[in-house]
Picture 1 (spheres, rainbow, N blue to C red):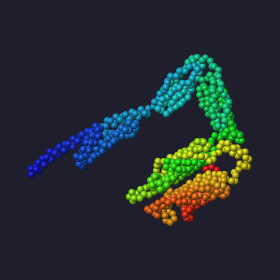
Picture 2: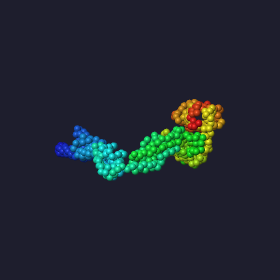
Picture 3: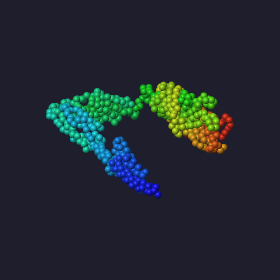
Picture 4: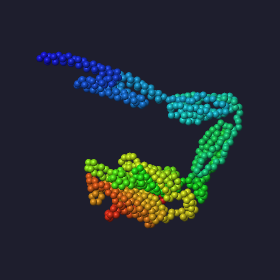
Length: 618
C-alpha cells in the first residue's frame, strides 16, 4: 500500500514538470522560427515530435516541415542571387515570407533584387568627347559611343557636317569654311531616354574658294575572267571624294586617299566593259573597266592555262592496324567529288596459336565505301563492312577451353593524302559494333601506289582533241563508256549488302560484294540462322553493250542453332556465284544471280541475289 502511495506522489510531481517543460520548448521553437533561425526551429520541433502525442504531435510535424522548407528555400535563394538569377531568387524569398512574414533577411534581399533589376533596365550612354573643334579646312572627328541600348541616333546635325554611323562609334566630317568668321552649332546623341549634347565649332579664315584638283593613278582597268583586285591612288586637295555608278559586277573599298576595286568572276562567254566615276568638289574622273570572257580560244586554252589539279587515280597498297596488321587497300577517285575505296585486314593468327597461348585473338575485317575530295590532295574516307574475331574462352565450371568466333559490323573513317602523282598515304580509325556502343577504335595506317594517273597534259590533250571533233561526232556514242558503280545488294537470307563493280572499257572487269543477315531468319530444314555473312569477288565479262556476266568466289560464315534455346555454334564455308549485270542507263545498273554454298563439297540449293548500283562516274 505504501509503494502505491509513493508512485502516485512521484507522478504527481513529474506530470506538471513535463507539461511545463513542453510549454517551454514550444515557446523556444516558435521564437526561433520568428527570428528566422530555421535550423534551431526545426531542431526544437523535432524534439516536440518525440515528446508529444495526438494533435500536438501533428502540429509539431507540420511546423518542422515548414522550418525545413524555409531552410531549403533560403539556401537555393542565396545560390540563385549569387549567380545573378534574380527572378528565381525573388520567387524563393517570397516563398520564405509566405511562411514567415517576419523574416527581415528575405525582405532585405528582395529590396536588393528590386534595385538591381531597376538599375539593369536603365539606359546608359557615354561619349568619348562632347566638344569638337575644327580648322577652317575641315576634317574628320571620331567619337566612341558606350551604351547598353541596342541603337543610338544622331539628331540636329549642322548642315555643314555629315556623319558616318557605326555600331560603337561615329565619324563627323566637316566641310571647308569659306567664310572669314568662325561658326558653331551642336547636335544630340540619343539612346533610349538618354541624350548627350555635343558642341561643334569651326574657325574661319578661308576667304575664297580654291580650285579643286583631282587625279588618279590609273583610269583603265583590265581583269581576267577569274576577276581580281585593282588599287587606285586618289590625289585631291578636297577633304573628301565619292564614287558613283559602280558596275553591278564590281565592288569597292574606300580609304582616305585610295580605293580598291574588286571584279567578280565572269561566268559568261562574252567579255564585258563598263565605267564608273570618282568625284571631288566640282571635279570628276571616269574609270573604264574591262573583263575578258570566261571561254577564250577553245583550241589553245588548255595550252595557255594548264590545269593545276591532279588527275584521276586508281591506287592499291598495304594497310595495317593495331590488331589486324596485314591487309591491302584499293582506292579510286580524283575526277569528281566522290570516289570509291575498299580494304581488308587480318591478324593471320591461327587457331592453334590461340590455343597454345602464343596469341590472344585473331581479327579479320573488310570494309568499303566512298571517298570525298576535300582539297586537291586531301580526301575524306568513310566506309562500312563486316568483321569477325576469334578468342580463347575458359569455362572454369565445366573445365573446358574453347575458341569463340564472333561476327560484328564495322564502321571506318579516315583521311588520304596524295604525296605525289605516284604515292598516297592514309590513316584512320575502325569502330566495332558501332550500332550497339561506342568502343575504343583500332587505328590504321597505309601506303598506296597509283596504278593509273592521268597527268595534266594527257587530260588537256584529250580535251583538245574532243573539241576539234565535228558536230556530228559530239552526239552520244552507241557504246556506253567505262564505269565504276556502287550500290546495294540483297539475297534471300543475307539481305543487307553492298556491291561494287567496274568495267566497260575492256572485255574483262571486276566486281566485289558483301552481304549479311543482321537479324534472325528461319531457313530450310528447320534450322534457325542467327546471322549469316558472305563476301565474294571476281571478274565480269562484257557480253554486249549493256550486258555483263559476273563470276566469283568467296567466303561465308554463319551462327546457327536448332532453336532459340539450342545454339549450335559458328560454321564457315566457301561460296561460288554467277549472275548478270544490265546497264539500264548511264547512271543506273541492275544485277541478279545465284550464290552457291559449300560448292566444293556438294551442290546445295543456291541463294538468289538481286541488286541495284549507281555509277560513280561514267
